[in-house]
Amino acid sequence: MLTPADLDALLLTFKVASLATLFMLLIGTPLAWWLARTHSAFKGFINAIVSLPLVLPPTVLGFYLLVLMGPAGFIGKLTNELGLGTLPFTFPGLVIASVLYSMPFVVQPLQAAFTSIGEQPLEAAATLRASPLDTFFSVVVPLTKPGFLTASILGFTHTVGEFGVVLMIGGNIPDKTRVVSVQIYNHVEALEYSEAHWLAGCLLAFSFTVLFILYTVLKTQPNVQQLK
Amino acid sequence: MPPITARFQLAYNKFSLDVDLQLPSTGITILFGQSGSGKTTLLRCIAGLEQAPIGFLEINGTIWQDSENKVFLPTYQRNLGYVFQEANLFPHLSVEDNLQFGLKRLDKRPNKADLKNLLELLGIEHLLKRKPDRLSGGEKQRVAIARALALNPDILLMDEPLAALDFKRKQEILPFLTRLHQQLEIPVLYVTHSHQEVAQLTDTLVLLEEGKVQASGSLSETLSRLDLPFAQDKEASTVWQATLIAHETDYHLTRVAIAGDTLSLPFIDAQPGTSLRIQIYARDVSIALEKPKATSILNILPAIINDFTHDAYGQCIVQLKIGSQSLLAHITLKSAILLNLQCGMPVYVQIKGTSLLN
Image (cartoon, rainbow over the protein chains, first blue to last red):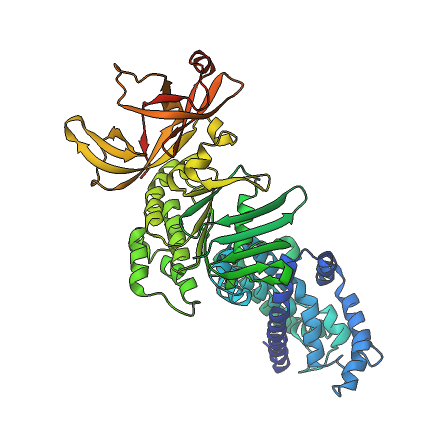
């Protein structure tokens, strides 16, 4: 059975993933829009930066974040100046790291959806008196709903599954940074295989259900790269 | 209303547009040209969908672009209606919501009766609840035209609205366009490369080639100019405005007045006094030096030879004047030489056939 500590870990994971998904949508939407429409020379550069977490080992990403957000790092100094303390080994730190880590899983489906609708509906909206912002909410969002759904699901599930980054910058603090993946690791380390089974089973069922919905009910086709 | 002034200069890799046009403030002006001639680019510049680095555009007394003074009104602030080649309806909205999309964003709603008339005119009242994917190509395009006109625009821009439709659908929409033509009070700029649409709809014709205006003027004048490709075309024709006088029911004919003379046409089901648009193909016109007496051809009119030229294939293209109206005739070069045609010579033209355009 699930222990209270397991339930805490599940709840924490859900909180981190929800918040991270929210921030990823807020940041990723304008970013994906820009990437889908710009002819700027920086497009390739930004695309590469956003996609880095797809290929980097999570420990590498976690290591740099730890250094940057630590007391001697650029971000750490900034947060200290602002009286916020340093971010590693805190819940906010974990959310920020998750946002960076899972961002490509949100940006890529959105970018693909924005590209696929083309110029035509935007031009039609402009000739019908809709300003660009108005057009985005009244035309683009309704037309790219499947893209937003795919982005949210992939962003959320990928955050649920993160491990390396959490270990590097979050550690293993109950109720603060101890997410499900870390809790499973703890169980295995302690040779509590039956507890590990319960938690691992939960995650397996959850992930399968979500992907099943994604592929059958929504009929979206996230590509291999998106799912890595 | 003051006329429309449009000046644009723009250059891409291999294409450049350089136009300076004054267009009338009523009627349909057709922008005609081959693909790549810049007609769609010109229309997009007028809509603001494309920004020419150098440009000046004044419509209905409002300046939409003046690059010298850094004025460029974005498309959504221009009081225009635009009909795209593909109807470009919003797929997530019903026909009614598509129509309301623009209306909702106007400061001042046009009255409901106008909208109802428009729906009736375009024959789409019964489609309001449908989604665009349940409409035929012709229906989609009619909805798109209604959506643009519902906004009560200062100008209607149409980019090859029939090009994506098959022949049958075209025939289905053209009567609606002709009806619009008679009722609309705003200027319409209409891009096409179809001779049929030119003959049927044009008041003013602008001929574009490689981004430059080759000719612009009234339809009959432009069609009969010998220095333009229209006159050389196998389908070359002139279009006349005529008035119905009377019917000859025994012969199933109708008499119409034209350029101070009359023509007999196959029976036309309309009242005397009706204004008609008549197309006469150059290949249906022959020339005689004396008035033919014993001939089966009914329509013989006196004319003056204004100018002529010939092509490399033994065809002579003759431009004639009947009063102030121009007429084109395609005859063989051999006939032209045997008749010793000269400019200013009085002749008789025999018109073998005509077609009615409205």
